[in-house]
Image 1 (cartoon, helix red, strand yellow):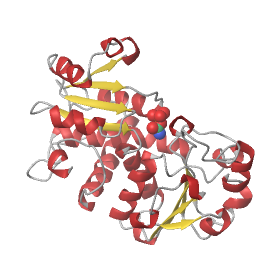
Image 2: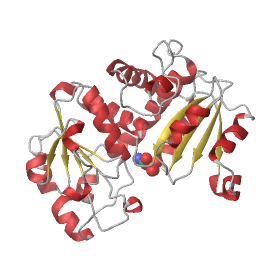
Image 3: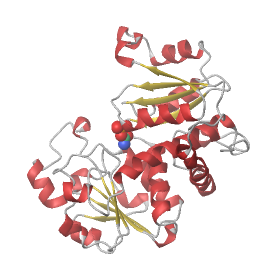
Length: 321
Ligand code: CP
């Protein structure tokens, strides 16, 4: 994978997966996001890093946060942005992914941001992209959602900059979550003290310990002394069989309530990549409560996506906010 996503000098050519990247690169994304964040506070929220470049957003699955923040991020970097409406595109007439790529490349695209229900779709695009064209993975099947993981790391870093002191719990539907997979790799690369997964057996991947995590099936035990808790949505659209107890029972066993949160450290932050299902995995009083940083995650997505786009297309030495 890294042969594909890195240039020979180790800089980013594509951004497809966290797995296998060097910690220094993740730290560089965080530092670049921190420096670009202040662009949003200016009267004119633009920098010329991607002036003259064309970014195409291709979302084959629904999205609110990722698609919109990628679009705003590209605009803030002064790129021209095209959002392909997949529902009215010629993919509905049977045009293949490869023909779609080549057709859009013929319009001189410089970067594709792709979300697709098939694991590996972004990698497929990157393998077939012309020289000089970059691909960013905005979520592929069950595989990876690397920009989400990086905005989550940026959010954690802003509240708790010493990863080596952190106990982080990821709770819920780990099995179907590309977000969780990318978060686990990122937390391990950044040296988190302990990564815990809290879930019923049916919502865990096979051999989860091989990912470098500790597994809990009980919320109170798993949350004990945690610094960060990340709640996940039940990905019902990816479930083919009955993996689960009903909604009420799931919330009773694995929902994050104010009472349960008290088992974590008093300054524990609560995260959720969204979209949330209130009353299924998280109580509204927690989602909207003082420890929640859920809307900060959304804002941080802008700075992190600006940083990654700038590093990929702007050249890692040319990112000047
Ligand atoms: N977290 C996330 O990917 O949200 P969207 O599906 O709204 O993009």
